[in-house]
Every structure is written in C-alpha cells, then in structure tokens.
Image 1 (cartoon, rainbow, N blue to C red):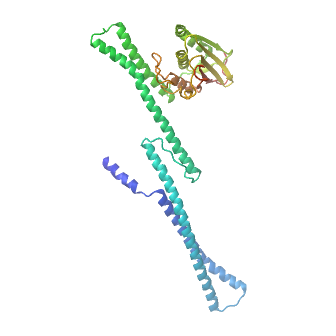
Image 2 (cartoon, rainbow, N blue to C red):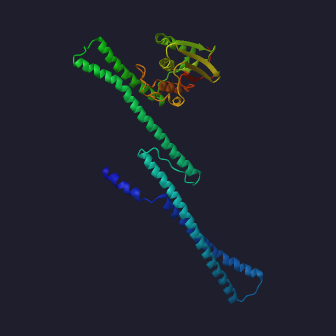
Length: 383
C-alpha cells in the first residue's frame, strides 16, 4: 500500500494545470482558424477575382491575365498573412492574460481550501471578478469555512461543557469510594444512594446525548397517534404540580375550546412539555407564575405556550438557548440531575414531528415564553 500511494502522488503533481491547458487549447483553436482562413482564401479568392475580370469585359493577353492573377494572389497572401499573424498574436496575448487571471483565482481557491483542510477556518477568499460562476464559487468556499468555523467552535464548547457535566458526578462517586476505602464512611444505604445517584446522572447524560443525536439525525422511532392536547397538557401539569408546590411557584393551564387533535408520539411530546415545565421552574423564583396555554393561531397550526415570570433571557443569549449545554451564565450550576440539553432535545423532537419550537423574552427579569407549533392534519377532528 505504501508503494502505491508513493507513486500516485508524483503523477498528480506532474500533471499540468488548467491554465496551461486552456492556453494550449486556445492556441490550437487560433492556429487552426488562421490556417483554415489562409487555405480557403487562397483557393477561393483568385477564382472569384478571375471571374470578375471576365465579367468586366476587359480584354487582356494571356500574359497580362496571368500577371494580374499572380499580383492579386500575392497581395492577398501577404495582406492576409500579416493580418492573421497580428490577430493571432493579439489573441494569444489576451488569452495568456485571461488564463493567468484564471490561474491566480483557482490557485487562491486551492490555497484557501488547503488552509481550511488544515483547520484554519477563518480563511476567506475575495471575489476575482471573473463572472457569476467564480463569485458563486468564492461565496460557497467562504460559507463552507464559516460553517466549519461555527461547527468547530460548537464542538469545542460541547466537549468542554460535557467534561464539566461529567466532572461533578464522577467527583462525587470518587470521593465516596475513597471515603469507603479509607474507612471514613461505611457502605451503607445513604452512601449507596449517593453512588447510585451519580451513576444515574451519568446514565441520563449518556441517554440524553444519544436521544438528541438520534432526533437531529431523524433516526427516532416515532409512533404518532391522534392526541388531545387538553389531555396531554393536563397530565404534564399534574405530574409537575408537586415540584411547583414545593418551590412555591404557581402553575396554571388553559386551552382554547375545540382544539383539533394532533398526530404525534404522545410519549415524546409529553417529554417536550415536561422539559419546558422543568426549565420554567428552574428559572422562576418563589412566588412566580408559570402559565401553560394552547391555541390555534391559524388553521394549519396548533400552538402550545409555556410562559414564566422568571429570570428572562438577554437578547444576545436568546439565539443560543437551544444549543447543547448552552448556559447564559457559565458560572451558574445546573439544576440537580439536569444534563443541559433538555431544550435541545425538545426542539429536535418537535421538529421531528414537522413542527417548531421557539423562545422569546424581553430581556432579563421579564420572564420567557417557549412556543411549540405543531401542524394540524387535514380533516383532523376537534376536541
């Protein structure tokens, strides 16, 4: 395998580029055109000239006619030769200049692509001004570099945050195991509960990462059935009632009469609503209010809103709230047991159903509203 790859590379590097090939092709076209013009003119023009002399009715001796024909042919060949030489030379100069521009432009694209391959995603290319095709090519390369730069930034942040999320449960498990080994603690029920809690948190983190990856790649096993939003929201609110009561946050639910049934995976959609309720509770202080409502803003969609009176979201953080592990305040710890990707999973699940999940807030201290939009199937009955 090593010998094959070693001999293939020189063959590729020895191959001529597009600019020399274009110049050679243009040269062949010009030379062929000049030669064709020369041959056709030399064959056709003297006979036409001789016919015109005969039609003019001017009497010439055979020697005079031969001399006139030769004079015309010679003058034609000389004039045509000079003209063709000048035209070919000028065309070659223009072709050389144009191929040089193309060569510099393609070299810039190749160089930029090489730098992007090396991981320098801040690379950008200026438009060479050679037409819309080259402009589109440079725009595509620049867009590719920008997206790769965003992906790399997100990847680094995700890895950093993932390490941070794993560090706490691992440190807790390690500390308790060391305490048991040193005899400081006994392997009793409270210790086992802490150890099991740490492993469950790691398991939940692994499951959540797998779930969001499958959802974003459209590999979820969804089982959509007609579902009543009234029943779904009522069940979610009932499940969260005790946690809200313990924190002292009021939770209400209201729906528009005669909402249509939506065709969704009931378990997955309940997971979305639960995530939104957990998120609202985590960011709403004691004495606050969380309102859950459902409506039909237009015939094609049903909307579910979860509105809180909590901390709110700053405008610069609003576009990022659905990113994995994103935290508006990096110094703030997550809620106990949270993996940091609940909103990411929720958006992926809603989009897998053909809907959308959005967030809005007027800024810090004004609360936030998360809106689920689900499509209504044609002819869907109403509740």
